[in-house]
Image 1: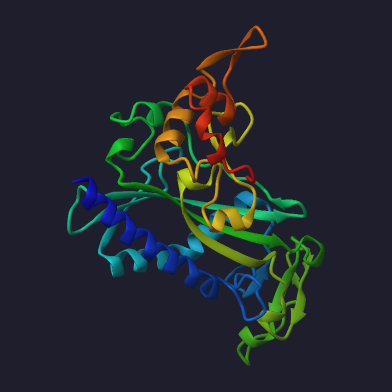
Image 2 (image 1 turned 135 degrees about the vertical axis):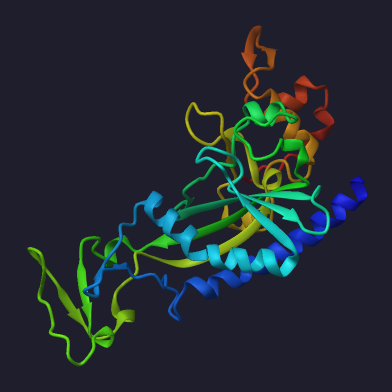
Length: 296
């Protein structure tokens, strides 16, 4: 059974990698800009969108979702969407050949900063992660998934090049009989000849697929919430070289199940274990220090 699941996982990851490679062409213009320019009303006014991460993430998800459905069809899987907003994962892929084979996929989007990328989280290390046979805030119990993956989208904001409050009227979209409208309500409308001449709010995409444990860090991803952080280096994300990547998934699981609850004596004081090196020392496995990937 384990060997069969591993074979399914290997095939699924290979297909997901190929799919991630294709997505860039689907969402971008030939100049590398996002092909989404804004949203349109019935009067053919184009309203630019905000570069706010929550707005961009949601529109990106909507943009690529038809491709995800097609991808699932091609590889013989059904997709089950998360029943509630706070459920894990975003997408459950269920094999049509064997319904016991399930894969969890979370869609993750973030933007580049000068010193790397803005971090994203890899899901909770709380209830469903610890109690793996339970179904709390998760589509299926954690241990029913043959693999847990991220489909990541990283982009650059075009903050200095675009206004988030512009309204455009595009000449190529107009019929001959239509009269140009110079205002939308009280707001001015800017006339442009081509849709492509409107600057997109984001550009320069990178897509990647990765197993969650392979890109995880040993730090929480967001303040006091029980979320697992990820490596911040783009190449490490794409090549699945997080801090646990040479140790294995079992150490990732055990570390994050015990994160913040296991304690050790350090300099005569009892402290909570919140880094991987201390955890390995606590487990008596200092021989594994060399397998800690330090660049993360």
